Image (cartoon, rainbow over all chains, first blue to last red; front, top):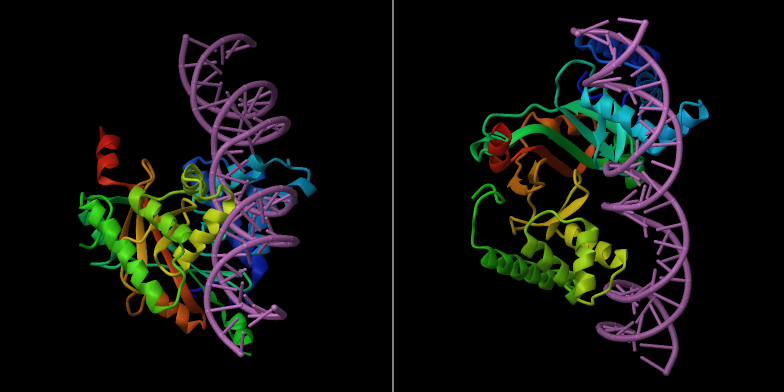
Length: 160
Length: 160
DNA sequence: GGCAAGGCGATATGTTATAACATATGGAGA
DNA sequence: TCTCCATATGTTATAACATATCGCCTTGCC
């Protein structure tokens, strides 16, 4: 499966798989997958869409896990830093990783009508952007690729 | 020249070229290149780096051109909408277009140390991201490509 | 003139993100 | 055991970014 986001799928199992993967990675790398961090990842996985930091914060507050911005931002920072979640710059929002495996280059398709986000994988090519950068001495550490447009559903409605 | 940003270049002439190009495009398309909009583009071109909306606003205020956020946001909106400037999502900042010609796909190299931004051009390839999107029925309208890392200068300092 | 569209100024508000400081908690080594 | 250190958390305050809304003025068109 190349793109995750617009199709139906077994959602409970995809949450479990993500959490299990995160647990394994953390154990192997001596990272602390604390209850707070775990809970934020669960929330992101359950919602299965891009959420603002303050949306998450609200959920945390309801559950009595703290209600101040840094609580959410720190957890998100951890999750993003280790690839368990991604930040959608275009929306200033966060989303659980849809391709739980180490080291991939995510690329996102963002519907401007319903804000649904699909994650796909981006592979840099010879002679492309990355190589041009290298030739000028720029040392790329992280790349964001985000396309906006209309998802299949909204596209249809839009034409109607 | 493929990448604009880290090299030295004739800056006054590049400002003039940008403004002249914008003037032409506006005239041809019946767009109103009002003094306010023009001034914001000039400021962006003069600074030649990514600026926050509030940085621009401060400059406008100094010049007595209004000091409220919408003044800056409206002008930026116009400039971005017509391709005279670009938004750097990663920084929530704006930068003058470095490739004054119609319809290109900008891609940015952003130094995380000094926030300098270089603009290069991104060409989508057969079989890549864009095609994958199309095959799922997603209709891409706009794509953002932003790489973060260290520019040649900061990279050297970092190793030292 | 009368009208509509667009630009502009100003105020208020909403939203996202971080700074700064204080307090736990858990492990390594004396 | 105690001390030190690193890391994580809790809390307060504020910075930074963005939009909503309303009313006024100009411009262009009938």
